[in-house]
Image (tube, rainbow, N blue to C red):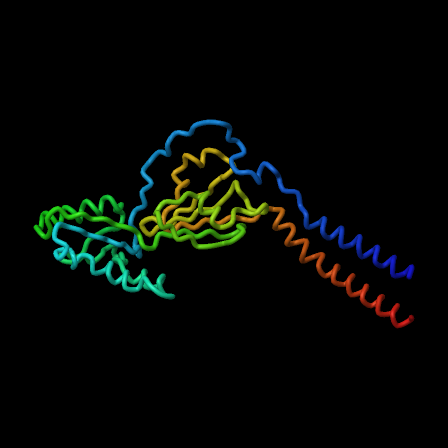
Length: 269
């Protein structure tokens, strides 16, 4: 029994040391958002952050007028969307509707024909289609409204729940997106979050410091459609992973030795 107690003691100390090695110190300052923010009132963010239409976007364009029969042809795409809105395949059905922006940046709009839309905001495209319908005497007093059907952002890396967020209201901040992903874990770099954004076929890479209050006035505070946020692991997480690969075999060997000793003791009894 004395041998058994001794072995259990050594194994216990080994497991305690093993757990301590996994519990690395994380700087409280780096684990807190906006650690430099005091009570204040921030000025509005400079610039216009209305999302611009890109290739492969899917647009829902709804037209109404005094005579409902005159606008049917312009809303056929929306009716296709609505017909697939029920049942288990509602999500897939909804994506069938709308106007897909092709690789050349055009949509094929009824009667008017091909329209170059990439780089435009919804407001600009709304004004253009409204004016075209009037100038060509196609409708009287038309009302045009546009929505994105595929507005989404992706959150990856050291967050609780990596996910793709569908943004129904077409406006989302980096903080909201991270919240929907379960927030950054204590092992994530809050001061070095990677943002990947595609504009006119070019990928823009930016680093976001969520410990710095200046992000609240940054042009990258609000996300655009198809943005990707990647949270890198900090040194504590990387060191923990390295130590686990080194120490795990030792712990398993110790446990195996304990099993052998216990087996011998039972046999001797």
